[in-house]
Length: 282
Image (cartoon, rainbow, N blue to C red; front, side, top):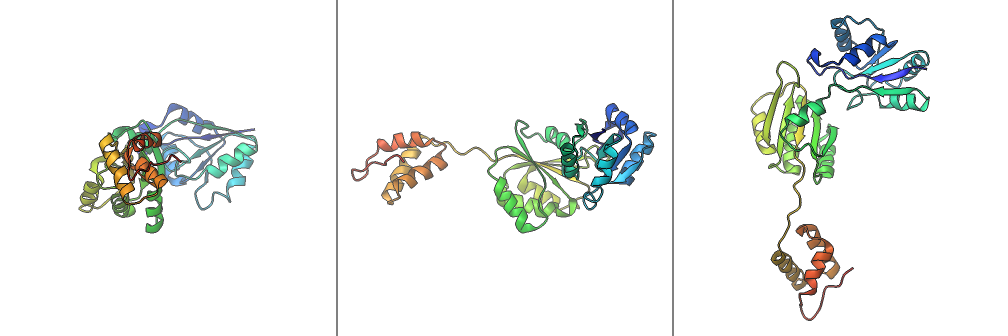
């Protein structure tokens, strides 16, 4: 039985390919690739001659059995047009099917726009959330951003040049214009560029120029909730009780807004009296 190798290929600079990737491409029986032209040029540059089969988004299910049949007798390499396979590229169904049929799947380390952009962004790398490409349609894109706007992790997003301005405008509106962003364009290529600033400034800047190339956007995560001092918590409790807000609801709202725990807010509430009543813990 063969092995399915997931082989990263250069984003642009051919020197980024690894020795292990070159050896694997030379030894496999078949290379399944998202773009036979791009991969063909790569193989020609490194003087590698191996059979190629196209495997992309619109034919991946039709080609699935062909690749699995090849695995029954030999090794197969899966490559994307550039970077690491499966990261916003086709291949998930193939990997899943190969595992189910008992074939070994080996992922090689190598080039990725994610790991190239994130360290160079200047933003936090402690935690990050990779979102792939944002939805094409405006309504779906805005709903998607609403779902992730409270995430404290740094956001990493792929975007095409013709949708860049619409995506930035929606991010300013939903995530907030004061968040920091690094727009990483044409990574490892001749015209590589990293633009850094706020979301608002990025929208203004890129409205003045024509976006070209593939973009990886790195956006700072949501700021932690504000931490109120005790005087602010007391004032908010008094205001809620004076307005007749339900005790449980008052505790919930102030807990969410203050950055205090529910028990801490309740302890403050016990010290306050309004019309001789106390807020009861739920």
